[in-house]
Image (tube, rainbow over all chains, first blue to last red):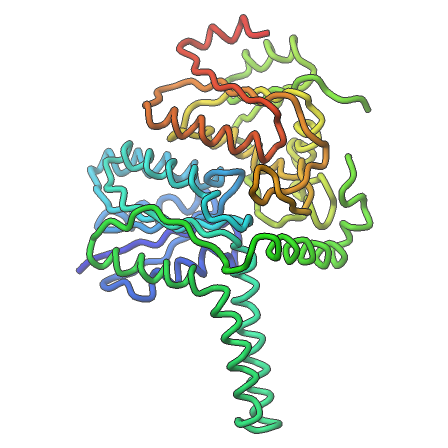
Length: 237
Length: 166
């Protein structure tokens, strides 16, 4: 049976965009699917051992300063040593997400993984770089909020009143997120076939000037709640 | 506090650290012992230009942001910075603000400390042609993100070359 290890490279314990995207990739992957997360060196041994009999690895990583987060790079160096020594050959896929709206800002990260594959003698099967990661996450959280409201609405006002509202909300979320979701699902198909996926870039389907406006409003709201806006928000320190 | 001329980030050893500290006022030794960025955005939204992790990198973005010139000495790692150096960079996103704008026709954050002169990379260790291409491309991207007007890439055949560095 085919074994695929999904390795989440987000440092966040819960609700990371990377885990969300890996979850979508994993939806249609056949065979054994193992979900792992690299947060510190204590995770290495467990994850490396799960690679021994694996066929595919899918990395889900956030874009940090145009590249791979440092704790993930440290893990990759260990993974290279381990896999070269044990002669483990894998097919590697990557799904990355950055905060900026342009998916193509993940290009350097993709090249880093391609170089990594050459070191490990893995088959580089490509990846998808997604722009607007934070918004994708906000959409996912909104989905659960809307679903909760839908249940409440159904109980109090009845299904016929609640359903159109929920359907409209669902449509908006799906509209903005659909490219990212479809690209992740397609990666799942490529994994099943053991086929190359190529390097692709996609994004939240919002024009960049609107996305920038939304991101600025988002950070103003968060910074009011967390207080940063009153502590020299944009000032030199 | 006045602005800094040069800030150096390196992942070499204690002896190089001492050598650099004799020459430059601002040397950051990426020794690989610091906690990685947790992605919380607190350095933007809670306590601007300060990390919630209380170690030597807590206000490293200020040291980087105030420098006219940033010099990074790093081992090559798949055409990118070593994990130790990347750790310092990941912890320094407070150099920018949470506000976004267009720069070079793409979305980037506005700069807390404004535009800077130059970003120079010295990399060492084994490097392939593809990795050098990746590194140069990433450097170009980093220069836009950090707001450097110029950038330079150097490969060090021999670490002894560093002793003559200006």
